[in-house]
Amino acid sequence: MVIRNEEKKDYQEVESITRKAFYNLYVPGCTEHYLVHIMREHEDFVRELDFVIEVDGRVIGNIMYTKARLIDETKKEKQILTFGPVSILPEYQRMGYGKMLIEHSFEKAMALGYDAVVIFGNPGNYVGRGFKSCKKYNVCIENGTYPAAMMVKELGSDIFDGRKWVYYDSPVMQIDEAAAQRFDDTLEKMEKRHQPSQEEFYILSNSCVQ
Image (cartoon, rainbow, N blue to C red; front, side, top):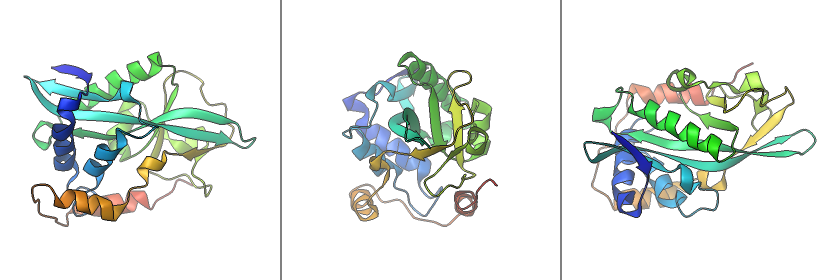
C-alpha cells in the first residue's frame, strides 16, 4: 500500500474512481467527478494535499483539499481547509483505506501550518476521525444555522476559543449542474437510480443542530 501525491497521469483514473464511488449515492447520478475535473486548476486547490492511494500498484482512491475561510464577528478571517471528494473504489470500501488517506493528509496539512478542517458529510463516517459537530466550536454557515452534516476537526489543541465563526467554502464548490451533466455525458454510460442513501442524504443535508 502506497500513499503519494496525485500526478497528471492519474487524472483520468481518479475521476473515474470518484464517479464510481459517488454515482447514485446522494442523488441519481453524481457531480463529484466533475468537481475533481475542475478543482485542480482553481486557485483554492491545495496541490500539496492531493493524494492517491495505491494497492498492489493500482490506484484505488484519492483525497483532495481546497482552502476555505472562517470569519468571526469582528470580521477577522481565518484560513482553514476542507476536503472532498474523498473516494475509494466500491470494491475496496470498508477496508480502512479511506481512514489511511485522511490520517495521512492530516499530518501533511499540519506540516503546512493549517490547524482546522471543516467538512460536510455523514457524521457516522467522520466522528471516528476526530470530527465534532460545528455547533461545539460555534462554527455556523452564513444564515446563522449549524447544519447537522457540517463538522469541524482541530488539527491542534484549543484552536477555537468559543467566539462565533461563519464558514465560507471555495467558489469552486458551486458546481454548474448543466456543465457537470455535459461532462458526464462524454463518459461511459452509467444508470441513474434512486436508492435509500439518497433519502438519508436529504435528511442530513436539511437538518440543523439546535
